[in-house]
Length: 221
Image (cartoon, rainbow, N blue to C red; front, side):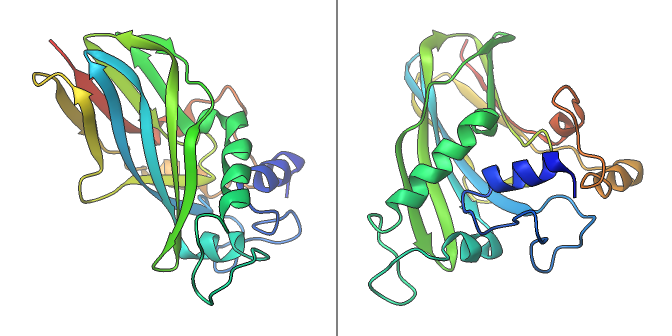
């Protein structure tokens, strides 16, 4: 396992016990990518025609959730309160900062930046953890077309839009239209490359992972 992968696994796991450099996640082949599966629901937040941020709810797979919860004190078996999960929620958002929260946005084709998350908390339900957090824009933006992409450039994490109501608009003008594009489906050649990513990880300038982005487009005439 490469040093780059080991460092990435330690950081992005949001739990020091998940996918440590000494072993691979249970039930995941050593040469497989991704290693963590996340279902996303998002709200694009507007003040009339001005976008102010994105509100995310990311539900992690049960394997990730089980490992992330190791060592977390809780009063009732099988239950965790928001307060009991507060330190883990903080670790999540702190770890995600280096990776820009896997959320990228453009206003009329120009990149725009997010500030640090606010209103972040973890929820535990049906054996899965859900991370709730809001990403405010550094400066609210008015644009005819907003494009938001959610993906992991290294494909360590698989992001998938929820099947039911994956994206909503909050506070947008009535004539704003929302469109969603699902991630690119890998070809056999791309699947073969993904199977080798543990041994040959993507470098920071590689655009391979962007092909598997979840795309949210908002148009306001």
